[in-house]
Length: 286
Ligand SMILES: [Fe+2]
Ligand SMILES: [Fe+2]
Image (cartoon, rainbow, N blue to C red):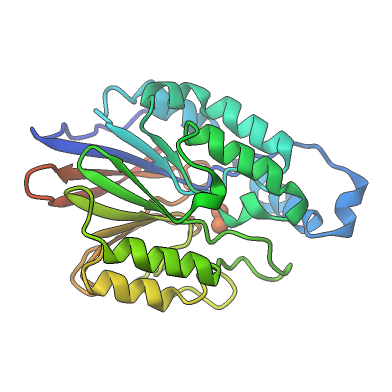
């Protein structure tokens, strides 16, 4: 039986973000044509190491305790699926629907590498992206600035199909140019955060390997060092972590995998001072 952890109440004037990631829903919709491409490895990976311990019920737990946690906005940083099929996105949208209902207009999603697994599934991703962001922007609009309360979210999409042995992310030249422009403007809200699947560091504070990193992530790191944003919220690394701004000048928060590591994060933003107070919450701590 699950016991939901006690979450500290918000202070007055605080805006609270529920940040979760990497739910990796998957359906047993095996098709022989999967043998022909990368989906074979996605399925194999899922059933060999994941399916048995995937705790999708954690999504219902967050929904049940949404009001108790005093959440103002919810953000999912990608890897909703295992191979990015239309069936998986439908499944993910269905199980997220009650949580989205609680969040209302204040629900945001950015894609992960598993959501962009193969080019053939791109229309399903584009459709899910639009639905999960309440139609406020198209996937092709990213990078995009979205303001909710005292927070300007910069939504990034470095997720794209890549070689079988890689799970890297990359932005196009146009994507970097648009991001540079957005980050050159004054922040539209008290605090500016980057929301992207790919973190700049892992849970140990080290850069990700060449097999899993955001290509040219040093460029984004430089923006952060110069104060262009105050936090980066990410997924991809399934162990949750918080790296304070001591080293790079901005918070780095990885929510971990909600369904594989039973973790998520709550990020409190003081609307007056802009102070950021993140915490990792573990379900089923025993
Ligand atoms: Fe993942
Ligand atoms: Fe990932």
